Image (cartoon, rainbow, N blue to C red; front, side):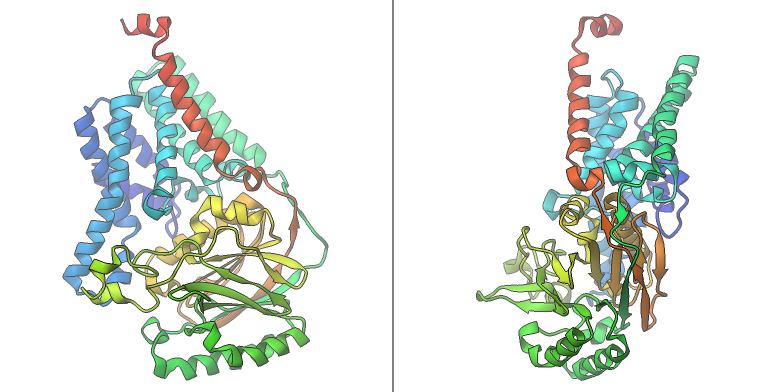
Length: 492
């Protein structure tokens, strides 16, 4: 039962998008943890997490086996180990809830969503973080989306969880007062979100728009780092670029040119010069060799009419750096992937320039970090993210990744331009809606218009701090209330 309940969360997210499933999953978890012991809760929470991550991030197998060259048994083992490790977050959540939170005043209703949000937040930064599959991502198109520019994705997760806990408590007590409390909770979250949804937090900077072109080359991952294939890649980019001069911004994906920029300056130079002549900014992913020995970066450069270099801050374990490198290097091919020795960039890098406009650059899964994107948005007119979703193969991973980019646009009231190697490339408006998108696994040029937006959403200005602080405060108030004379009399 716990495993099936966890798997329901995946059904609520892309590409399935059956959003009630996430609320049903939380409702089932409330029931599973309603009267159990701490030890039972630990086990049930872990099984819930195993079902959740086992279905939601099964694409890790593709990365490990197909592109990491691990054998099928080893890839299965590493995938299960990865999912089982992530499930420990839900195990600890369930144990804390049953042992410490459930007995508190309002612990069954308010305590459950507060603790849920805190554990989603913890998962986003513990051991570099894995902020994937948050409950709130399912609600980009529901009334709850109205809360996103204020609270971010965590507020949407809170709304889902409190919907479930309120309904569970009403069902458990079967009293008119409990149903009335549930109705009030649902009215605040759902009706409140619906009333907020039409609010315009930002406005267009002008009536004119920028013309953008995103090149999706669909270069096979197994050939990308092959030196013999490099001339073909360079010819492919050079040929496709010719008709794109004149667009305001042209975007190439992550590591578009699979050699260090310093080794390719003579190749880039004529392209940059012609782009500048036509008023075009070329933004491309490319590895970068630092000035200090041993410093290598996964980077974005802006050329032509633009300028600037950005080095990726959030590196993917094993894909871009190897934890415990001195012990793991050389054991299997998966620990020796090309370009797996990158250095993280500084957190205080400036935005790229595209003509007069400021572009906040984000590489690959940096777009799934709500706080990082909010900070980058404060000094940006546009958000740009490039990725190489080839690592996901033909799985649900790229569509989950796209959905998270949509919510970043909604949270911050900024257009998001998303360029990938093999899809899904997309142009997303300030409300998180797709204005244009490519098909997967095809070479294509996606063109469209983007608006530069003025103003800030509350989430851009304050980030996750108000909501997370409010959750800790709520726990403190519930804890202190448990020691009040009236509460002690009630328990007796």
